[in-house]
Length: 193
Image: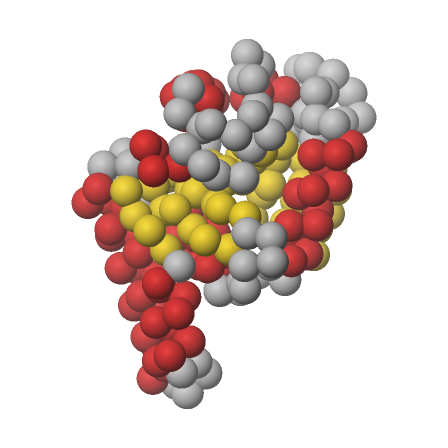
């Protein structure tokens, strides 16, 4: 049983980061580290997930045992808890400098050289986000609400290898998503690679 670890960083316990964390946590074999700029924001993200899942219990769509199991797979904290991750999905603000700074800080913390850095960017260049980052970088754009919507865009940057692309497509499938691969058709300037 191969275990992947997934970690989300987002600003002020955002809906997208929490939703992505839930999508991974409700899938067998994933351990989730839900991170934010401080402990309180990360805990608020997990609380948001708990409230949404509790509504499903009330409607009879999930059992309390299922919800407890999902929540038990989510650890909250700040970026320092993601040192052993296999995959990081960043869902910070859609601002280039914020995304680049997030990955720069994480590359100094993450121990695994082959950890994939995925960004949930929807309109920013994956190549530019990954410039100067030592880990493989790719786009993994979820749609809102992430636990429900089946589509995930997998977006290559100029330096994204076939191996990294294929791993992210496989991960998307494992968590019940249909991936649409977005290929680099032209070089800068472009809103997306």
